[in-house]
Amino acid sequence: MSTPSCRWKTLADFAARLLAWWECHGRHDLPWQIDRTPYRVWLSEIMLQQTQVGTVVPYFQRFTDCFPSLSDLARADLDEVMALWSGLGYYARARNLHAAARICAEQHKGCLPKTTEELQALPGIGESTANAIIAQAHDRRAPILDGNVKRVMARHAAIAGWPGKTAVQRQLWQESESRTPPDRARDYTQAIMDLGATLCRRRKPDCANCPVASDCQALALNLVDQLPESRKPKPRPRRSTRLAVLQDEQRRIMLERRPPSGIWGGLWSLPELPHGDNRVQGQPLLSIEHHFTHFILDIHPVLVHASESSNISDNGDTEWLSVSEALSRGIPRPIRQIIEGVLALED
Image (cartoon, rainbow, N blue to C red; front, side, top):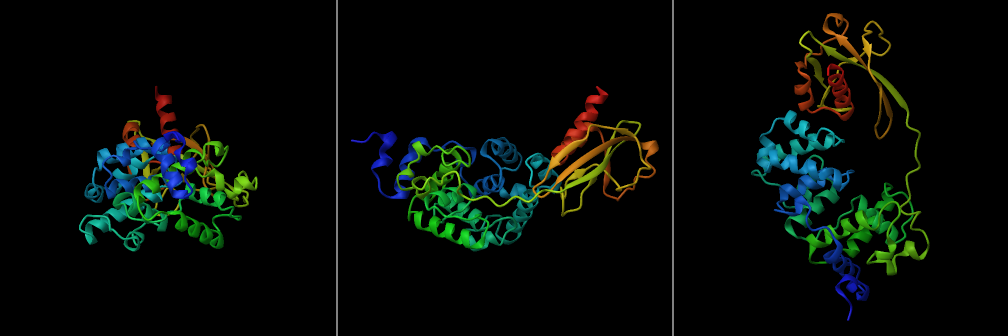
């Protein structure tokens, strides 16, 4: 008789093997698996987009402490939401989350919709995220295709090509659909994500302990390291900006809100000095190199006293804040670094 730890080796069905493995080795105590409401599932799925579990957990816990329900989030001010999101990156996720919560409050009686189509109509929710919510919150069959699942499908079915291509993505969806079982939707969805996150990793996959390795086509063809194929990288251009750390006699710092769209949309930042305008000199601070998806930004902060700031324009959406108040706002990580550096100078 097989031992529980390797029972999946005797099963033929992909889903059965995966579920047997997950029961022994999967993740069962993630915070969104406890009190698994649609709201908590949705929040976790948005936070986990392009972000690892270890990074998400403390943000999720702080967020749900402040906004324990969808109604709480809908009533919140966007500044509160952005402040809690600060440092997690991809800030459009937070703006969309807040906007979707308000739509749910106005149009869905304060609840998340229960169909894939209605969920996809909300800002920031695509097909895979909608299906993940359906499967995990309502235990209904709904195939998913997040980054981890794409990797598992590409390897297990030996699907060549970059997953971002429409034709390749269509194949991956077909594979995900064919492997998703008719029942245990909640467990299977978590299991397939866990497989990609813990064994079928991007680098150094643990094929020896994989429950579906016996019929993995990439493993049979020695293509595990080649699949899924990466997009051919384009060289990222460099941009440069000068930011004014503007302080008054009370050592308060001026912050200005960024436009709602674009880089750091809706967040608070430091005033940007016009390119090529050297009328404002001030004290140069340590420069920061910040990497975005499509370019690299070299940030050159300058400490400027208010009496020397006549050449810095006020766009009307600015506030004078103490350093501690500034750090409590929704600010991007590099701006936080700069302000913390000013605080260190004062100490």
